[in-house]
Length: 637
Image 1 (cartoon, rainbow, N blue to C red):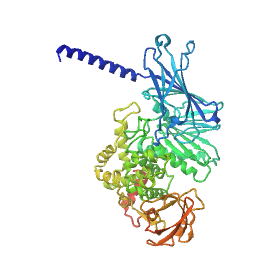
Image 2 (cartoon, one colour):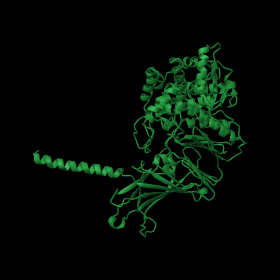
Image 3 (cartoon, helix red, strand yellow):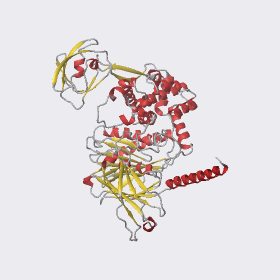
Image 4 (cartoon, one colour):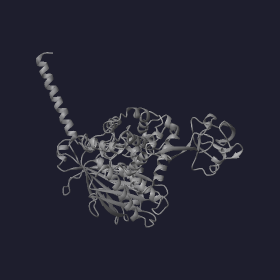
């Protein structure tokens, strides 16, 4: 190539590069975006949304894409929220006072979650005026009260933004505003509420918008308390009898806040909102964490037995998320790609360790006694150790398959009951073991508390801001292992290899022995059949699942079969364990099976117990050192 040719090519390349850079810069130019939300017909369960996008007065993008996320943060199953979107429209409009309203703009549905609006007309220079906006509107159906979905009824509106608000593609990072028009007599409250009857809100980006759930109703109540200069709002929407328990509930929530902030330090927000729903409908139940609020949803009334305790348990877990997962977060958790499921190996840390601390904090707050804490931890151990999937799925793999197991809907039958474990109890059991072993190795000078604080300090408070979403950056499981070594001077490589990335049974006995406790177990029945019963069946014993390494599996039984009789005894859900108590391992017993309306007989060779009850007990004669370690663990030192 001649020097002249090289100069020409170089000039062209430089021009192309400049064009690419300028085009990319234009694509990143923030848009002025405002959301308008109304609900004129609550009984229809239809929210009406308009997204106003101010258009540049000079030629900009040829089209704008609007996208409904497939899932939302905190619940990792894919729900495809776009299925509830209807009546999508778009038009261009001028600022008030100017007569330049345009006809509806064409809207094309690009795929299952994306709509595209053509905004570049042939007569663009003549028609486009400064301040013109694209008004993109749609309706979205919502009638589920949960931390993921939204509900609009004649009683209230509860909004979780991920299933209501589309985002402008490539502009999730832009500041957004929200204007809400509530039905007459209804009042609006969320974590950004600063004054009575506030209807206008502003957010630094779309991710924060959808992280701010909103309750709109005529009859919610709010009680406040202050801890370390921070204001906490307790918003309660009761659809049943409170039994006079609300004042005590507020006081106990304050105990939780004081206990958890004592571990972490003062939170960075100025105010925080507990949004608590007593749905009293028998089925709505959930909890969801947010940066400056949480939603806790109970299926009963506050006065109902057990509901008060469940509310505090949910609040303790969700408030701990203020630090762990909302700010101290795995790399993949914020900002998110909502066109595909989230894939992270860190949910055993983000959710599992939060489960551990959510329970431990109630003991430290004085809401639980030792017996309650120990029985809860033992139940987590039982859930993991009794699960056949514990031999197949590690803590990290359980995190990765969260889209399959986190309240995920399944149109097809699965074998997940035999192949998976849940990262909540898996992480909780690992947190217990890790915490106590750190205390042992440091002679009580350090704990998992110190590691969590160091993680928060390094990755959230002191790391450079990696994305538009929040300060700091995300971490990987390797980062967690590295911090363990730095803080505790103990190499966690073997622990991670065997118990986090591997499926070995954690050393419960060694860890509990550090604080003068032991793990005991007893069999649920003297023999194992290897089946679980369908909880919806009250008369016949219908099989819900079959353990893969069990007598039932070896005999060819399967889910859906009805065991009509075992050894000549009619089998029911009520007498199942009583019937098994007549046998011993190795016994051969005839079972009458009903499948697809046909009756047959199968011979079962009963096995040794495979499912156990677990208990955490005090070791008689525990040493003073162990007792002191236990007291420090339970107090939070």
